[in-house]
Length: 285
Image 1 (cartoon, rainbow, N blue to C red):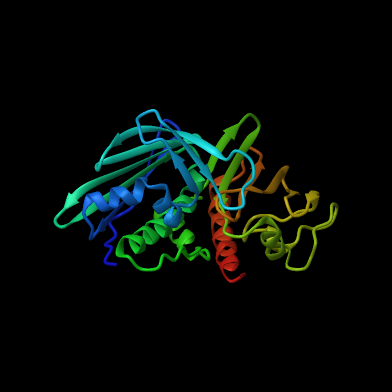
Image 2 (cartoon, rainbow, N blue to C red):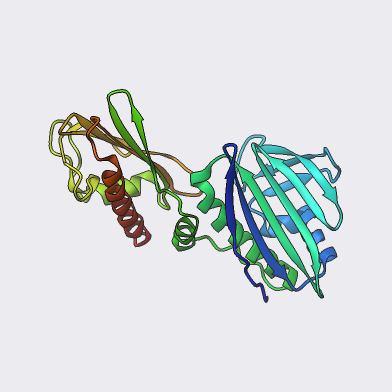
């Protein structure tokens, strides 16, 4: 299938993020519309099974393969065949717009959500889903590949995610860096510890440190979820690996220090360290 990729964009406003993806498809709008709205077609390329009442205000349900329970629900917000199909999915909103483009169509997806650090997971997932949609429209076998991590990391760089922030509080400064990773917490912990398990009271293993950031002694560890160590003068570094989007852990790294703490320099050092970690994780299958 000939599918040209336009520039995918990410915008934020009022605490919400919108991912916009455009794809040209060599198929008329009516065919694309059918693949977007027919549950039997959706099952072949969409990330979940879908049940839908095709009417404005109609109910829509989502269930992932192997999932038990009621699944997630939403509401059809816009329905204008064969031009616009939009609906909520939990707290997210998805809009699929189809416009004629010569003998084909221009498909535009706008996914609006609240989890900015998850944007690369959403973008890489939709990239693969829309590729599968194209295969379905072409009449060939549909292959829903799973990203091994390279596509996700390309979107992290493209959107400038995980850059972190510095804030001032009474008595000092704090940096915070949140980054979606492509491997589960257990795997991330193995890479960070490199065979040297952290122990409270002992020096922090090298993998949990960054160049030019003072090292210290571990004060708290809950493998494979979190580690905190102190550094002089009067500061602390914390690693937290929680549940994230996709199939990987969500890393939140913080470092606090006194008023004279050069948080900007430390943040730059941690960016370099986390990028190194992300690259190492790509080599772990």
